[in-house]
Amino acid sequence: MVLVDQHSLKFMEELTNCFGPSGFEEEPSKIVRDYVTRFSDKVYSDKLGSLIFEKKGTAGRPTVLIPGHMDEVGFIVSSINKQGFLTFNPLGGWSDQVLLGQRVVVRTNQGMVSGVIASKPPHLLPAVERTKVVVMNKMFIDIGASNEEEAKAMGVRMGNPVIPESRFSTIKKKVFRDGKKRGEDVIAFGKAFDNRIGAWTVAEVVRTLAEKNIKHPNTVIGAATTLEEEGLRGARTTAYITKPDACITLDTDIAGDVPGIEVNEAAAKMGYGPSLTTYDSSMIPNQGLLELVIRTAEKSKIPYQLSQVVSDTDAGVIHMSNAGCPSIAIGVPARHLHSHVGLFSMTDAENCVRLVVEVVKQLDKKTVDGFTNHATV
Image 1 (cartoon, rainbow, N blue to C red):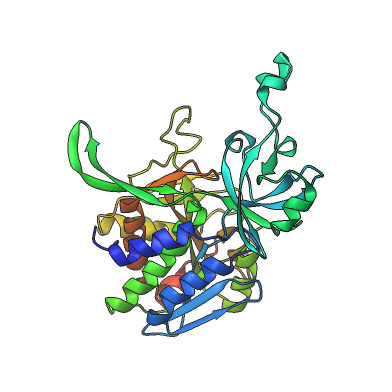
Image 2 (image 1 turned 90 degrees about the vertical axis):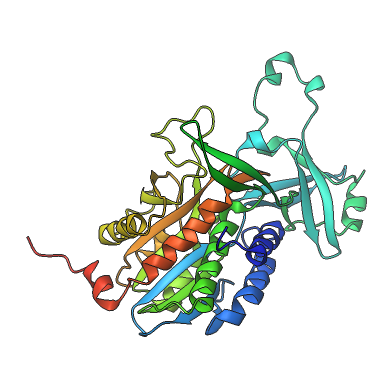
């Protein structure tokens, strides 16, 4: 590893372990703020809680916005029944199939309360129902209470946020391509990779620019945005405040290298480099910016992948902000997103930082203006 030293790896661990579902991002915001303050020229927030940090280059313009949302998927308590069990609504998208039997943590005014997602035991279901997927509104969170009063005495109430209980860890593996050993990689396991990886990458880009004294002909504005999983909301206010001339959104991508996924469904693979989104359900990237990123990756010998995804990213609203903003989304492929435990390659994350730094070095006013100076046919 070159960029991912022990300091940045510890930052990744702290950031992914912390508590911060959509609408409750105070903890990741503080962690990012504490990390970026020492190498940013200015740090501030919008009124939805998105954290914004600036690194001035050799010119004030253009403004290059690099956002990565810091919220994670989670849940919110919707009721406490008479037996002391909690019903819940999702914060962000969840598949019903990944929930049963998983441990969670409920944050209350009295502290954290452990629980497990459960449902009516399969032993008591009619045979015809045992093979059906249990849907979320038939599940509940068991915190060990035996009635409503006990649950409330633990501090639980409607509106409490809930996240998966899952801790960050890593393994080192040997990498093989075409039957030949190609070095080593570090694979991370944990929750909230969508999108603490992006928030981490943004911070590492700004850190690299500052600590390596890299010249860049623009002002870089990093952002750890809120409420992406609930409608890309923090991205809207961040774009309104910063008025970017170009945007490089950093997010995760679905790693399609698992059984049952075809290339046309998810082309990116874990360990093969960051992915450049050529289309998603909220944005078609600016083609000039996309071509610049591809040329930069190839010139710098940074591995990359082309991808198309069916989900949205912060770029979906940022590229329509103000009079429009040339935008692209770059992702780190991760397996098992929106579940209790995902996996991603630390080498992919490192290469994502390298790629964005190299692109930022080229984004002067003439280049950025060229993204939107369309010739008349």
